[in-house]
Image (cartoon, rainbow, N blue to C red):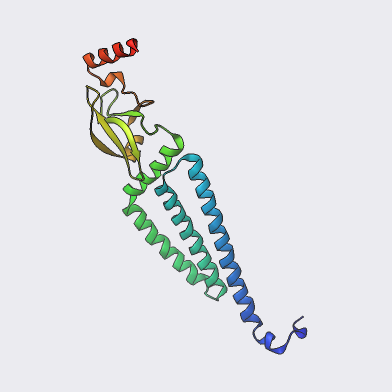
Amino acid sequence: MKARLPHWIIEWLDVIVLVGQVLLIVLAAWLLHRLVRALVARLCRRQGLPPEMATVMRRVSATLVGFSALLLVLQRLGVSATVLWTAFTSFAAVGAVAFFAAWSVLSNIFCTVLIFTTRPFRLYDHVELLENGEKPGLKGRVVDVNLIYTTLQEVDGSGATGSVLQVPNSLFFQRTVRRWRGTAIPEAWLRPKDRDAGEAAAKAG
């Protein structure tokens, strides 16, 4: 087949093949990246994940796809497997150190994913974190959930709202959580006279 090609093409054939392989790797990486972005967007819409979580997932997937494509390109360019393996292990070691250094932040991000997938509570529910058994702890109405914290709005005995608490998301998987669905203030949180007034108003209505 080479005998039928022009002489100048034969001289550049190896370079053309190499450039074609590199372009195919880049194209495949780009298509895979687009596919992952579409899957992440669909997952976020179905599970109701916050935009911050979608951004993190897109960046992580883009980093993994890009790094894998870079390794393949370097391999096609003639870089030895030993050098690639050394570079990969060095990168993995640095990543492991960074992982342990940021473990508290990463654990909260992972717990955020669990909160949105397992749904232990939803926005505007009232929740209470029990310390030991029935010992009361942090409580309030869920007004926001981000990658690190869940924001609870405190409610006093009269039903009035007070300050807000920012609770690390990992704490919800280290404590027993008591949940009241809906926006109505739990009767257990109200003082007796306010509870009776609320019941009388409900009966009158």
